[in-house]
Amino acid sequence: MKNNTLSRAGLNGENGTARNVHYGDILIKFGDCLDGERSDLPFITDDTVLPKFAGSILREGDVIFADTAEDEAAGKCVELRKLPKEPTISGLHTIPARPRFPFGTGYLGHYLNSDAYHRQLLPLMQGIKVISVSKAALQDTQVRFPGLSEQTAIGAALSEIDTLITLHQRMGPIFCFCAHGSRTNFASTLQG
Image 1: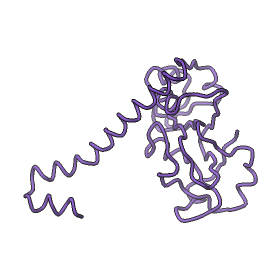
Image 2: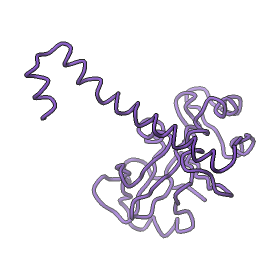
Image 3: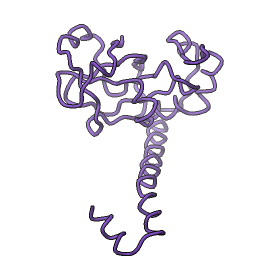
Image 4: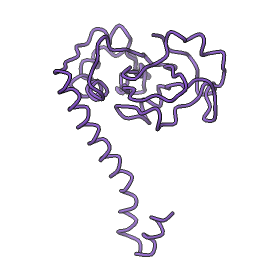
């Protein structure tokens, strides 16, 4: 599988025949697992790009690594859970990977972003101002995994925890406002 070299200038939020997973979104916006049906993956503006990547269209279960960052976040990845109806391809500064055999949903996304795995990448990273990790470096790492049913249970449990954390992060500003505001302001905040 290969990635494209489109910058943000070649992407848009409105329409197109294909979607793109950008490394910046992996580093900042996405968690360990991505539900592409519910996210706002950008569209590729140039419709002539997709045919060049026909053999690299992403599937559910694929993992995409951000190969560069300004810090040791290089190597962060996202597991694709669900994809939008449009074909999706891996973007600039990413390394798409497809497991050779089935894994439990959510397991790889959580495991490959864990400290246990990421510590293997640290000595393999290169650069000073911008740090990168190569495809060859990723191939030199070890992936540990239990049986499929346990992987599925681990993936589901960690996804539930992620959902709770996200919910609490979204509620934080409302609770903070409530502590310092009035009852009327809190009610209007919930309505608005």
